Length: 271
Ligand SMILES: NC(=O)c1ccc[n+]([C@@H]2O[C@H](COP(=O)([O-])OP(=O)(O)OC[C@H]3O[C@@H](n4cnc5c(N)ncnc54)[C@H](O)[C@@H]3O)[C@@H](O)[C@H]2O)c1
Image (cartoon, rainbow, N blue to C red; front, side):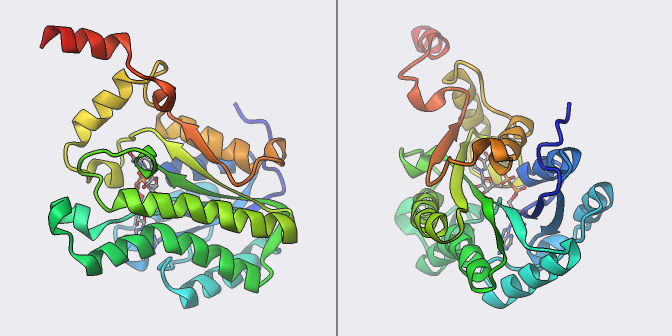
């Protein structure tokens, strides 16, 4: 069901790789709620061509940008304002990548050049998007900027590796830039900390299936799926959440405040 929650709003959605991507679901829901937006992803991700289908479906122009490149981001913001006929009301940063995780490096054997790449792609890119938008005066007042995070920013999970540090930085950037943009533009900046979700980035983490099952059994509502995450993102872009800023918002079915659940106790009892 749609409610026209984003009617008249213009946005940029980063990170739709294929139809399992969280950003893909956000684009579909934002379109259904009346938003106009451009879609962006790294030039290398465009090769798969999947994003073209989403662009057609949502009437969205696709503008490639490496989110670590200030030059690319400037071009993306300028082209987006041109395509949408005005400044931007919402941005979704749905970007994450760790070469150390991809190449299954042990946490005691990290490659530090790759670590820096992880931080640049998965965290600093969020700052770069906002800094570029601010410089170009590309944001409308009462806009909403979101990035997707994971609870490994606060708690340790094996194999999430340097992505845990990247998410901690990402959430900190949301607070610092949220303070700044709140004052200058009445723009809110938040992160949504999402349950394990079956996507390309998610299933790239070693042992993801067990991670997923544990999350599900530790959450009274079960893991939040990509569709419900997209609903939450839409709510955060809408005028119904105007005063929510500088928050890390848990979207996890209750995982983060569960000590232990009957399901886990039952499994321990069996072992
Ligand atoms: N899947 C999960 O379990 C889970 C849980 C919590 C948070 N998240 C976060 O959600 C976000 C989206 O991930 P997803 O699970 O939908 O997976 P995904 O693989 O579909 O999306 C990750 C995206 O990042 C893009 N990307 C990588 N490097 C880039 C660059 N240099 N410039 C621009 N884009 C780049 C990829 O092309 C891809 O589209 C990520 O921040 C991820 O960490 C995912």
